[in-house]
Length: 295
Length: 297
Picture 1: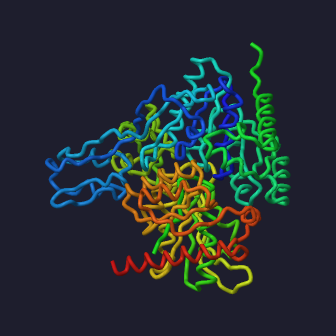
Picture 2: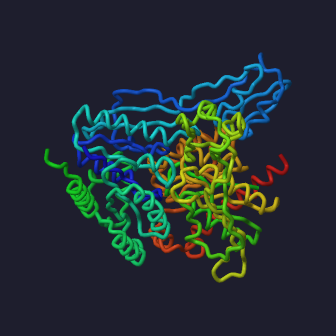
Picture 3: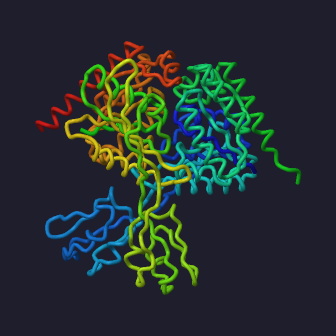
């Protein structure tokens, strides 16, 4: 089983649209893991029917019992997150600020503070209309557990893939270069970078590529909106060559991307041979680079 | 007044709005304004602006460092850490900086004071004087940049905001180019703002992620309005949602391929595209309105 992650650094380059297209092309041979947990949109074009749903718990929040609190203020002194405020004679915790470190609970002289386990989000296993399984998650409002949730989604996807003996896990990765993207990339077999020939696209690609190179995973690149700026596209291709990254496709600027999203479809199901042909070609190359060794 | 420009989905035009609005306010409205790039993982305002560096400084956070000489191997530290950032291995202690939240519990509660808190570099803040092409007008511009390989964006954002607060003036309009999404980094920027502008694009992805951002801001109790980017008059997804939720749409930047080309090369749009100039004015008028309301209210 091969794990292929699709990442972009910059948002809005077409990462999720491409992942959905690959998922359609791979059909029942794949489990899809939506690890863009902050903006998980894959379900909008794959029409999943939920098979399993479970809570994901992670992290804690301090809760002060006003009945027991004697108002000594020791908790305020030790809190480095300014998460505790006076309320009348006693104190209360501001949930948005609390990092769940438990320092206050540990030093409270009257044991008035309880550390409550927090629900960080929901994890879903679903069957899509593309005849594959989708593992996706919904993060609770303002939860800071996105890195852990990514790891959890991937674990579930791996278990599902092993159970059903499929060839690929397709991971729709997280944006940026921080904790969630590291969690999306680690332990994968191949990275598909999606970018566009803009200064921002180029800059973000360089930064996210450094994260990828830290892991030493082979990578290929899809340039979307390839014809919006000829000079930038040239620079981008020169950069890929210099970094020994295979160019998988140059997709022309097309409104088919937003039309597909609004029709609830993947791009390869639409009528636009120029775009569809190039995405299919890219997927063929990815498959060739991810052949299982003979047993 | 601190105004964050945010969006649930990436690539909807946060940075485009941030730089164009800042430049428009400085050049056309001739008002003092400051721009702060809080997208510390992928700071991109620099693609569209020219500036001279006024000051560059390294930002740190505090993490514990094990002092072997004094440690009595009590194992207390590993027991108090809720983040598994400390491993007690029987005859030594290991600290994992990427897991540490900097709560000080291990350091303060160590019986032999063997885990002093020390500086840990996370990134750089740069203050520029930004200039506008063909104009003598300048404005302060701050960029926070997380070191590659560091996973802790949120403390870097907090430090960049603090730096901006120290360098901005009270009367000034301070615009934050916020990180995308709805988790910790975006929350950090939102918490420290007086008002937010959510940029949304009229696709089902855009609508879904706008919905998440709206929920987050309602939870935080922050006032906000919406700017539609890549607007298509034929698609009313965002309009319908905003009507139901009673959210004001203050401007609509049309979907123009010409804009994509100018953006690609790092150009500002309002000088070349009259529709963008008109919409920047609308956003600015809205900012004036809400800052009046804040003063009188």
